[in-house]
Length: 233
Ligand SMILES: Nc1ccn([C@@H]2O[C@H](COP(=O)(O)OP(=O)(O)OP(=O)(O)O)[C@@H](O)[C@H]2O)c(=O)n1
Ligand SMILES: C[C@](O)(CO)[C@H](O)COP(=O)(O)O
Image 1 (cartoon, rainbow, N blue to C red):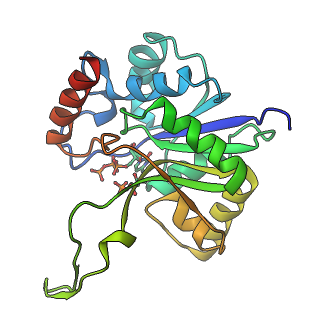
Image 2 (image 1 turned 45 degrees about the horizontal axis):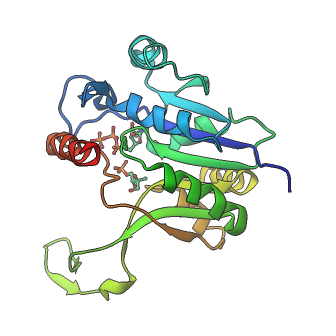
Image 3 (image 1 turned 90 degrees about the vertical axis):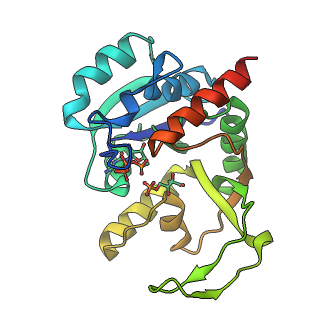
């Protein structure tokens, strides 16, 4: 089989309200580089990735071009796309701009800067076989289902629970079909896999790493700094 064309969509157009930084969290500095530079450099370095569609907020165009793309010489970014109101809207805006010759689309949060190279490779190779793969790690805590008044309703079996991250990687046509169907049904999900699951398409887990954290609240930045120090020693 010829080498597949792999497009990546990186969404970085959120408001970062839980970070309360006054600037989009993707431009906060982590170990001397903007968070988004770490994320983009991982995709730039991966030989299996052919292009990056980067979805950003309108107000971030200058900072993104100057402080990230130009400073860190990110050559694979084919297009900057303006994001939407929800993560799903942003992703769909990016998906519409993917090179139509793409076989596989690998989606990722701009706010997950610690993605490992071996995970990217496992995602792409796994998707050639399974059409839909998502990175996840087994849940370590006991999880409770609760009602609106915080009464515990039940305790699911922990061995069936996994915490889902990104990348989430799909056959291009499948992901496009899933997003179009979600728009038609007015369905909003918190990850791309939910849209694919609605089509009754099996989704396979790729076991990832606990340190692929999403920078969401201020303590996540401190944690990410510590993880980078450990990796570098
Ligand atoms: N309308 C949106 C919302 C989210 N995202 C992106 O989706 C990823 C995951 O979202 P999250 O970390 O929850 O980001 P925010 O929505 O920015 O955070 P918050 O909920 O704290 O406002 C982030 O890289 C974020 O930039 C996006 O591109 N467009
Ligand atoms: C896609 C995701 O990162 C998987 O964990 C997550 O669902 C994004 O959700 P958020 O509400 O935008 O943080």
